[in-house]
Length: 254
Image (cartoon, helix red, strand yellow):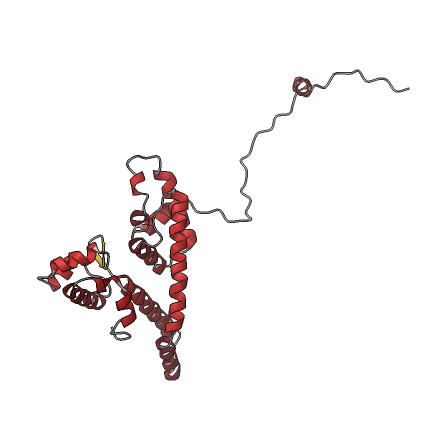
C-alpha cells in the first residue's frame, strides 16, 4: 500500500474504546487482528484470521461477542479501519482521475499530499456529519417499520456507515425500507427479516433495484383513452330526475 502503509490509531481512541475493558491478551489479539485486517485491504475471513492467530481463537470469539470486531457473514469488519480505508480509496480514485487528465505537476502533487495529510479537521467534520446521517437513517427505519432499533447500536451503525461508504443517500435507504416493509410485513415468514442486518446488508444494491423507480416531478403522465358516447334524450331525462329538475313547457315569446 504505497500511499498509506499505516493506519491512524490515537491513544485517545484506545482509552475511550471498549477494548480497554478486556484482558491484556485480548487487547494484544485485537492489535494483531487490526494489522492483518489492514494489510488484507480490510477484507479477511474469520477462518483466515484464526489461522493467522492460531492458539488465540477464543480471544477472537470474545472480541466478536463483545462487538469490538464484527462477524459480517463470515468476514471480519472493524469499523474505524473501514472509515480510513474509505478515505484512502477516495484519495486513490481522485489521483487516478487526475492522472488520466495528463498527470499532476510535482508541486501540485506536493500540495495535494500536504492537504491530504493535514485534513484531519475536515475528516472530523465529515465524521460528525456521517454520525448525524447514520442516526437519521436508523430513525427513518424505525418510523417506517414501527420498530425500535437503538440509534446507538454499533452493529446497526456500522451497517449504515458501510452503505454510506458505498455512495448511497438517505433517499435510497428510505426507498428500500419502505418497499421491503410493505412487501414483507404481512408475511409471517418474511416479516422477521425487516431488520437492519438484512435490509442494510451487502444485498442493499439488489434490494434498491427491486424498488419501483420514483416518478419525476413536473411530468404529467398520459391518461388512458376513454371512449366517449353521446348522451341520448333519455340520459338527459335521467340526469334531470337525479338533480330534481322539473320539466316545464317553454312559454312562446310574445
